[in-house]
Length: 279
Image (cartoon, rainbow, N blue to C red; front, side, top):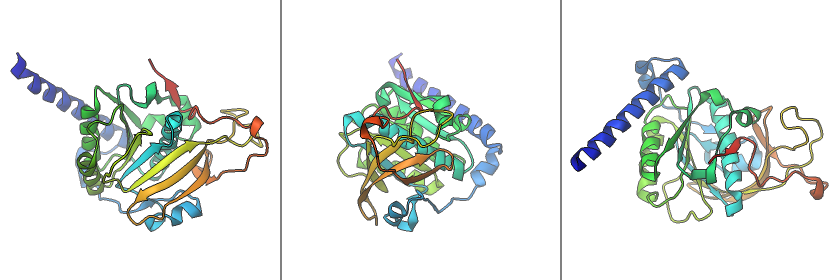
């Protein structure tokens, strides 16, 4: 019986991936042959904030690369997930196909994408395939398989623990991402350290939102999501830090508005409304 366990697990993985490929092809509206023949884009995803884009080679976040998004503090984990969510919204706006949100059990401190919140941030939940894996090993495998499909708009990875992720694992993911032009956003904890093959590493902290100047239909009384972001590593980048906010109507970032009344500003530690607590 013990000898059949690996075979059974491999078979289960094959079934899962075949199902994902069918769902991706259905969402994208293209046959499998057309998906395989699609060219590999070589472009960037601008932030829309001049100071940030000038710090990046090519004037934006490289598409078809691995990017690490790290929490500045343990309390900033939801902010990291919110930041990955709006980057995913920009990817979905710029590229066809679905996005895979791959999360290990327990990853994200029990937070998971919430459809109404995703819509409120300009991220189409109908184009997101959400996959929960049993452990980090399965998550790394699933992300690598997804990066092998050029029809995928992007991949977001949310590990629970990072015992296996290191330079070797990141190199495999980075090579797959580059080969097929698929962008991977990896949400890492504040304990992240060591060298990896990531194209960029960002350190994210939540900051209070400015009081809104007009009524927001979806989130009345709450200001735009806002972060303090630091570009701490990357090939050919100019490290720096900025305060930015997200405009869900234009699907662009902007320089964060100054706070006129800190006491009245909406706190941002809960990371955004695109997430819900599970478990």
